[in-house]
Structures are given as structure tokens and as C-alpha cells.
Length: 305
Image (tube, rainbow, N blue to C red; front, side, top):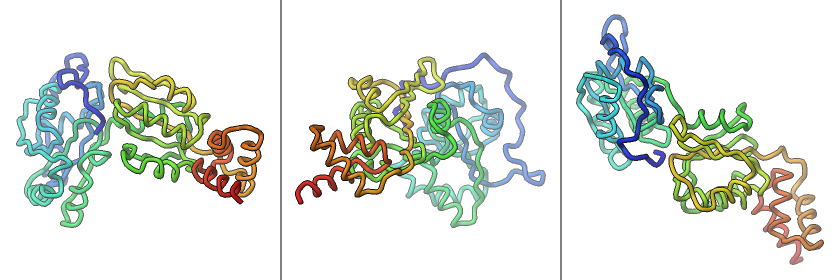
């Protein structure tokens, strides 16, 4: 889950709305369908809650929540008068509780929520769905707000092909980014605010300083910000960190226009002309789509003999 703002400011309330007429959440042949329902919740602005979400929560007998306190606040903020049984499902207990929740869903609808966005996307949910499918219990979803798609369309980068990479790894990051340096699809990452400076610096070093990117902060909230530029520019801008929930969108690599031997030769030639080997590798990597680390190590080997 993205780093959470203070609970009191979690949701931005829309204008008062009339309480919707209660009705079955998911009718099937005139009866309630006993299924697990993955329901997307607002990523910031409460006005993004769908009518289907509100109606489903009005009649839900059981709600499984990443944080039951946050969910209780959401129910109140949406004006939901129903008080379902609340069960906690988070990263520390998902595997042990999944079977219990699946068995519960054989007899009644179970609605699954995370603190924001769609369950299972960098949040609890996948293990539960896997267990439900294995047990033959139905699973459906109520679509809704997505930090990934919102950031992608606001980034100004290509949206026809993209890859969501979740949170940047804390360990082994250099190797993980080196493996992604040649990826031609637009890349979307989550990152915590206190690690954004290091993340941008690492991306700049791995992908090259001229790769385009966007830092999307506090999406749908009052202080929403989308900063666009090169990785070098954004690394400088956020060198002192940033606040709020953050999604990083990074341009994919250009189609490879040079083979590795030719690119290595160019790196060696630029270094011989006085350019730092690391800078030369980064520049050639950005131009060819080859990995910076791959080029750097190959150029080192070529210079040795």
C-alpha cells in the first residue's frame, strides 16, 4: 500500500448525498450470490466512490479489510448505515486467514477492501483469490479508482503498452533496475516519500539521465502534483524528498538501434575522448536501449584487453 496520510485527512468528502436505496449487492437469479467481492475504494477523493460500491457496502454482511479502522471511517464517510462484520486481512495474516475467509464465503457474500485502490494490487488480496479459486468459491470485482492508471494517463508518456512493477525493491535494486533498463514499455512504480530521492537517483543511474519520467503525488487529493521531466531533472527536484503518496512513471527504452559490440565500442571511444566511463555508458544506454550496467561492465572488460 502507498504510504498513508493521517487518518483524519484520508478521504476528501464530496457534497452531501442522499442515502441510496438498499438492495442486494450482487443479485444472481433473484438471490444473493455467495462470492468474494474485490471492491476498489477511493485513492484519495471520496467522490470517486462508485454507486455500486456504496450499494454493496449497504448490504454486505461481512467486510474483510486491510485496516478495519480505516474501513470503519470509510463507511461513516460514505454515509453507509450498515454495520457489517469486519475482519482484518493484511500482509502479516493473509496466508493464515485466507482459508477461513474462503469457507465463510461458501455461506455468505464477503466484500474485500484495502485502504485505497483495488485489493491485490500491491495490497492483500492475491493469496485470498488464489485460495478461493482452488476451493471452487466464486470471485468477482467492483472496479474503481486506480493509482496506477491515473498516474499513467497523467504522465504524458506512452500508454499503449506499460508494465506495473509495484514498489521498487529495497535490496538488490541495482540489479533489478539493470534488468529493466532495456524494457520498451512505459514503467510504473510505487515508492515511499522518504525513499523518493534515492529511487530517482538510482533510476537516473540505471536508465540514463535523459530518460523521461513523471512523479505523481497525492493523486485526486487537494494538493495533487504531477512533475514531468528527465530523470536527472526530477532527481534534482526531489533531492530533499517529498511528501504524500507517490507513483513514478518512467518512459520505456527506445528500440535497440545498436548491437552490444557496436555500443561498447562507442562507450570506449567516448571514454578515450575524455568522458567518464560511467557517463559514457549511461548516454549510450539511453540512446540504444541497452542496459547501463551491461555496457559499463563490457566496456571495462574491453579496455582491459
